[in-house]
Length: 199
Image 1 (cartoon, one colour):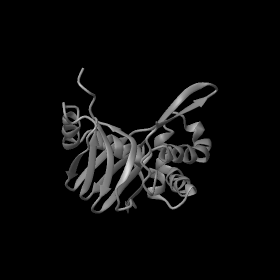
Image 2 (image 1 turned 45 degrees about the horizontal axis):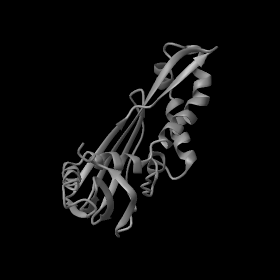
Image 3 (image 1 turned 90 degrees about the vertical axis):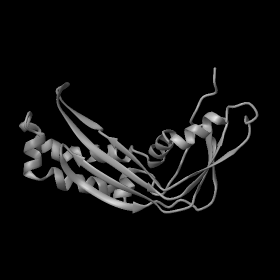
């Protein structure tokens, strides 16, 4: 069973921009800057015109590929409190039982460095690196652990994310937005794995 955490907004691109085309337009405005073009095309100046036309779409695609729910799940997998409860849940007498855990206000940070490779006549001539930095600020959170997995979450406080997007050291956009998650307990299906049972 696949797990999906589906916050709103759901991707880094939608956190930064209202619509799918917003990310393309923002990247295009940066790529058209002569200083940016000369920097990213320093090793292949003859490709500048085609890069200006095609790079914004490719960069926006990378931004859309970063799903906020996946980043959150990976962050909670590293939580000491949640992992300790998950280890305990495998102890004799606790298997199959649910243990409540309350997380105080906390943050989850995640840095991504996706890139675009540019080919001319089937030969790679450029690699252009983008940066996507995420910082989630999460208020009080009630969780439930069972059999080594995080199985339920109940947000009890504010929830927001700051997204910063850049390309080769040039900032494209940055924004802090609230994440809309219902203030009710929601089950996580089979759960987020936190600790394996002892061998």
